[in-house]
Length: 92
Image 1 (cartoon, rainbow, N blue to C red):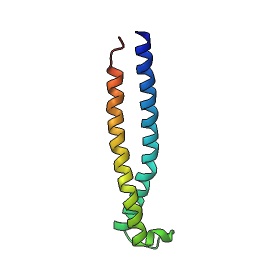
Image 2 (cartoon, helix red, strand yellow):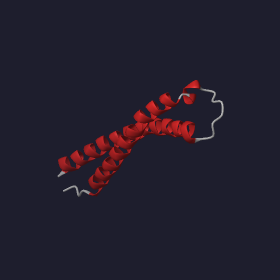
Image 3 (spheres, rainbow, N blue to C red):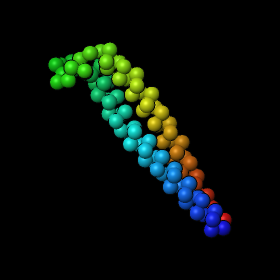
Image 4 (spheres, one colour):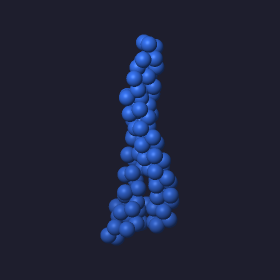
C-alpha cells in the first residue's frame, strides 16, 4: 500500500524532471526558430549579425530548429498527459 504510493511519487518526480528538461530544450529552439523566420520573412535591413544575412545559413538553422521544436512539443504533450494520469492514479 505504502510502497505503491512511493512508486507513484517516484514516477511523478521522474516525469516532472523530463518535462522540465524538454521545456528547457524547447526555449532555445523556439527562440532561434523565431529569429530565423524573422530574418527570412521580416523586413530586410542590414542585420548586425552576418549570419542572418545568409539565406543558406538561415535555412540550415531552420532545418535543425523546427524538428527540434516539434519533437520537444510532442514530448511535452505526452509527458503532461502521463503526469496527469499519475496524479489521478489512486494509491491503493
